[in-house]
Amino acid sequence: MRTIGDAIRELIDAYHLNDKLLETKIINAWSEVAGMYISKNTQKIYINDHVLFVSISSSVLKHELSIAHDDLLDQLNSLAGKAYLKKIVFL
Image 1 (cartoon, rainbow, N blue to C red):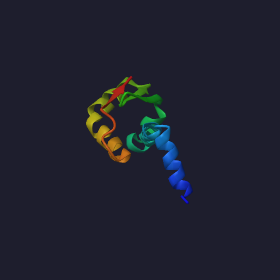
Image 2 (tube, rainbow, N blue to C red):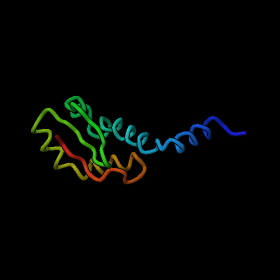
Image 3 (cartoon, helix red, strand yellow):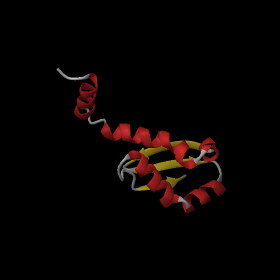
Image 4 (spheres, helix red, strand yellow):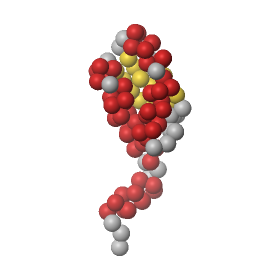
């Protein structure tokens, strides 16, 4: 007999959903890491090929975020539990 948690983990592994779940966790952590003001100015956020793409409405915020790129990347990877993201691109 196995627990429901074990069955769910087996299902996630069988359907190769680990990366998608991790990407969802990272995207949901954006507002926590970047802060509410930046989060409110984020128009679109998605991950493709281990790169986080963030569309920001303000060019000034884009510049500030590009300066803080490495710190943001470290924080997001830390919350993910591993170095999943390679970089962040601000659009």
